[in-house]
Image 1 (cartoon, rainbow, N blue to C red):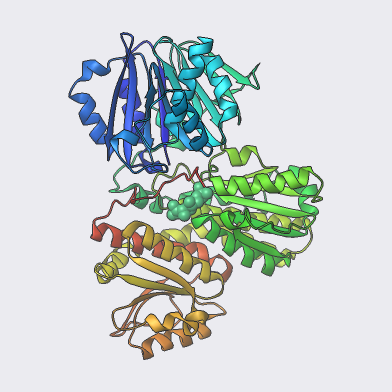
Image 2 (image 1 turned 45 degrees about the vertical axis):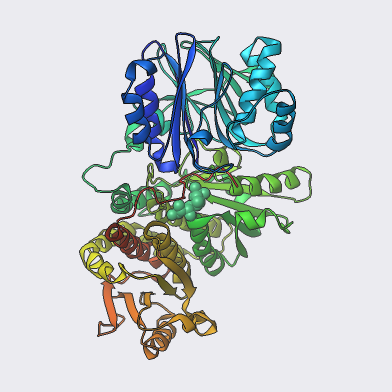
Length: 615
Ligand code: AGP
C-alpha cells in the first residue's frame, strides 16, 4: 500500500527521501513522487513505475531537488489509475500533501472545493485534502490550525504528510487509521509509514496514536490529540532485529524461507524450553485465559491459513470450540460473538485494515456490554503496530522483518506461536494432559532441525518446478491439518508466479474439481505419514485414473514413490500435529522456483502490497 516518507533537516534530504521510498517498495506501489521546498518554491517530480524511475528523473537535475524539507510517496492506486497526474505529492498553491489510506467522503468535499473555485488535476481523493488545507490556511495563516480544522472533516482511515512553502521548517503529519511513525534524529526529524524506511538515518522512533497530529521541526516534535499537547514515548530499535539486507540471496523471499529454522526456534523459545513453559510466558494473562470458552480467529490471506491450522489444534487438543473467519467477511455480517470469547487477530503487519476494523467493531460491542468476558489477542510480527496497541494481549512472532510480499517466515512463526498459545490455554484450563504436553514440548524443540532438513530439498524442488513453467492452472491437495497448507501453497503459487492455483481438501475432489483434471493439469499433494494417509492415497488414485500428473511431497515412510505420472519428493517424517509447519517449506520453495523461472517480480508481485492498509 502507499508509503510516506518525509524529512526536515539541515542537510539536503532528497537522497534520504529516495532511499526511504526504496525501502518502502516492498509495500507494493505503482508510482512514486517527491516534493522539496527550495528557495520559497515547491519542487516536485512524479513518475509512474519503480522508484528507480523517480531517482533517474531527480538525478537529471539534482540541484533542483537540493532542499532541507520535503515529502515523498509511493502510491498504490485506489482512486484513479496509476498515472503521473494521480501520483503524490498533490499540490494546492503553496501546500503539498502525501497520503496513505482512503478519504471516503472525498466526492462531496471535491464538489464543495470546485464550487469555491479550486480546480482538480487528478482523480485522487488526496487532491481534495491539499485544497482543503490550502483553503483553511488562507483563513488561519497557521498550518497546524489549518490541518486541525480539516482533519475532522475527512472520513476514512489515513495518514498524511504536509508541507507549506511559507513554513520551510515545519512538517506536519496526521495519523488516523493508517500507520505513521516519526523518526527522531539529532537536529533533524523524519516521518515514514514504516520505520524500515528510516533505519539509515535513525534508530529512535516515536509511534503516534490514532488521531494524533504532529508538528515537526528540525529540533522539536510536538504532538496533539484533540487539540491538546500530548507526549508520546521515544523507543530505540535493535538494528539486528531489523536487518533488511538480502545478503547473498537473490530475493528476499528466498532469504526469508531460509531464515525459518532460526525464526521458528526463536518463537518456540519464547514460550518453552526443554522442561516446559518458561515462567514468564503469558503468565500475566493466565486468569483471563482461564475464562475463555470460545476462540474466534480473524485474519486475511496467509494469516487466515495459519488460523485454520490453529482451529484444528484448538479443537483437537483443548476441545474448546474455535471458529476462523476472513476478517473482511466477518466485519460485514453482524456476527454472533458469545460471552468469554477470545478473539485472536493474526496479522504479520498488524496494520491490515479489514482485521483492525473487525476487531474494533467487536471491541465496541464489548465496551457497550453486549458481550461479556471478551478478550482480544494480537498475533503479530510488528510490536509497534496498531493491532498490538488495540488488543489486550500481544503474542509476538519473532520472525524478524519480512520484506517479500509473499509471507513465509511470518507464516511458520505464526503457526509456532499459535501452538504455544493452544498449549498455554490447554494447560491453564487443565484440558491437556502432562503426557500430551511433554510430547508437544519435545516436538516443538525438534521443529527447527526438521525445517533445516526440509531446506535440503531445495535443489530437488527447483528441478521439479521446471514442469510448472508453462502451466496455466494447478491444484494443491491436502487432507485434515494439511488442508490449510494446500490453501497456502496455492496462494503462494498464484501470488508470485501468476499461475492460477486452487487449494482443496482432497476429499472434495470428486465434488467438483476432478472435472478439471486431465494430462496437462499438475496436482500438488501434501502427503505426510499421518492418520489421513490412506484416504489421501485413494484421492490420488482418483487423479491417476484421469491421467492427471501428481507432484507429491510425501513422508519418507509413506511408501509413495515416483512413477511416470507421479513425481515424489520425500520429506522427513514429522509429528502429525506439527507437520503443517514443516510442509509449508516445500510449497514455498516450489512457488519460489516456479516464479523465478517465469521471470516474475518475486519480492514485489504485481498489484499486491505487503501491508494492506485499505479495505
Ligand atoms: C501472503 O503471502 C500475502 N501477501 C497476504 O495474503 C497476507 O498474508 C495478507 O494480506 C494479510 O496480511 P497481514 O498478515 O499483514 O495481516
